[in-house]
Length: 420
Ligand code: HSE
Image 1 (cartoon, rainbow, N blue to C red):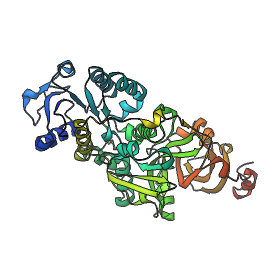
Image 2 (image 1 turned 90 degrees about the horizontal axis):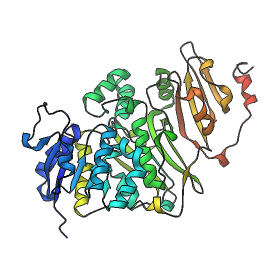
Image 3 (image 1 turned 120 degrees about the vertical axis):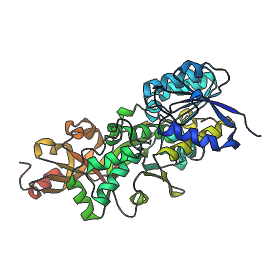
Image 4 (image 1 turned 90 degrees about the vertical axis):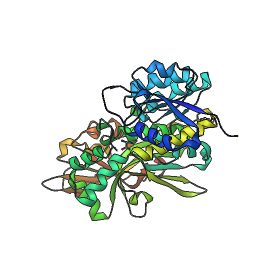
């Protein structure tokens, strides 16, 4: 089987769009050619044949000679219109738009089923790492206990530069932007939305749950305080933004994106700069680890290229776990061991914690280490406050049945009467 010829309509000629154009020029064995490129701003100088460019989306979407749309634009709403029209028009689609996919997964599933078309999006999660196809093809639910990963290259780059080179947060972010890792709106990276969108996609391919991204537990790195870095350094930890999906019992999974302290014995400890890494855990295989560049022109292009190659052989995600009779849903009925730092006690509610095991106060900052129920955390006003930093302790996710709740009264002495 030599595969079908692909004639591509490309949307977007930014960091990744230009990358895929360059790569396809050299990958003649793929038998995939770009017929037209749709761009938003015609005035810009671009390093490609000017005859390829148009601003008319319909010219690509309605061209019967184009059998594959590669969508690499920034705007998630426009991307959804392009992708859904293409699928309706009988064209297969490759997309890297994690926000669009995470927000519209049920619609995109329905469109593929109705029109017999295929949408592939390996580049949307962890850049060059082949995580989606692996989860889809290899790991049935009973082979999977959890996945924990660094899925955002920009925040990992920023945290690495701050911890290793002493760079200020703003300067590290600027570098991530200049290197083409960050989103055009970097709030999506630093406030955790990008990782959250990726988590949502992973959730569908691990346990077949199509969740609304903002219904999940998340917090980014923009509120981290220098005191947090000192706390980490004195204990030999690193701070990482970790996305996690963990089976919690029959039919239930925990799903969260939160800053996390990582110990040297974790595979995530050595994941630096724009690299991503995903630990896959199962009771049979124990731990497996996937590692690679998670952002940047060519790492992302490599995943797009792999999807294009797969479509020559009409590959489709089967979404077996979504269609499986064994249904999972997201639970908030579990506990987290967390470190929380803040400026003064009026910024957090100590009564939200099941127990507080450590407390420290300086003129500059206060912090505590304690255990909190996730439902309570998600309802707490202080949780999303930019003044409050929350970091999960190593192995800090605790099942409801595993926790020995401690009496909060015990600690009033340690806290020097602060609970009175
Ligand atoms: N802004 C994203 C990141 C790009 O930093 O991971 C790749 O999805």
